[in-house]
Length: 447
Image 1 (cartoon, one colour):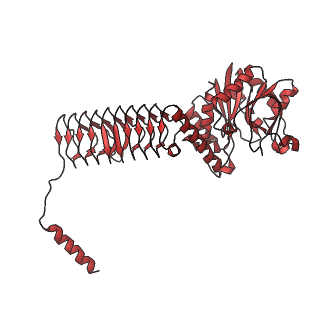
Image 2: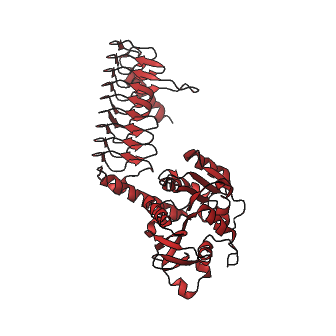
Image 3: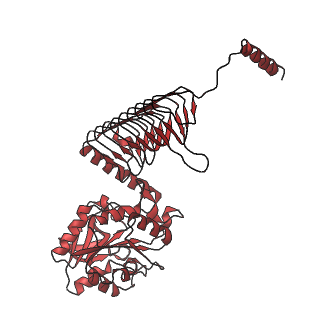
């Protein structure tokens, strides 16, 4: 049976004290909304509908950047969760299958949990609700259930003292056949303490119509919602702890795990070694047997087998390192392909370039790739040797087995096997250093 996602992302999130929509605040370099969408994507949904409200244009841009097929609808009035889900009706016209309601500020629902909810639907439950045992039930809605049979959901503000003693709480995540979901929503009223249309009311309505309702449970950590900056920090910490554990379980070595920061899509191969204080931005793949040394920052790059990067290196988007490449301390590489066995070991910037196999880039080398308007490329051939403090003024090509003398400014192509020397002739002025220093000291004393 087909599945549709309805992701609620309309709230302003006033407790975040932010002009940005709450669901666009990031954990591991991805908006909370995108985390929720990725969780739902594990179900291979036929349709994905995002219900936006506050900052709707920005929410739509983020949603469609992640999934161009996602449909974004607007909730212009914030009248409760049932009202929000109702806004997805038109976008699901003609859809036949189950709809599952997720929340854009609840990023950590696991695919296994969603599969369990779908399984309960397949077993005949009319409505399935995701619950959890809360350490501090507080403001959460309570699930009134016998075993996994759910009778009703009571909001905390409407609950009796007996109901408030229940620790099985509502996550808000709901699954039902789409047409039934909307039929039940049509019956929801607003006769409650908040005067809102609660999605939770569909359980009681379903039971009154002799439909079964079941609760599927998950650990409380999965249902973590983000409402404040403190919640956001806690969510980041939770993600990082999970990502570090997964990396080590999959065969990577993290010598100081608590200091490594992952992005949502970081991929590490087996026997990778990550030293302390490494930060991964989005879009990084590290292949097997590579080593990322301490205090390096990587984003948008691919590091092949057996490479060594760092310490204190920066790989920016478009950096592509072939097997066995060495990138050393205080080296920055951007939009460049570095072929097998090449070395850029010290204090260099290589951008918009192609570095040939086994080439050696000396300390202090810079590819001067930007003329103030356009970016230009530098090509360095296999087995070339670039002397220390060489300025390569792009566009320029240094041929295979060519050499540049230290301190050169290279503005013209260098043929294969040639030596390029582009620096002014040194002139020594006898005794001039002493005379200049004496003059300067005298001027200082005269002040």
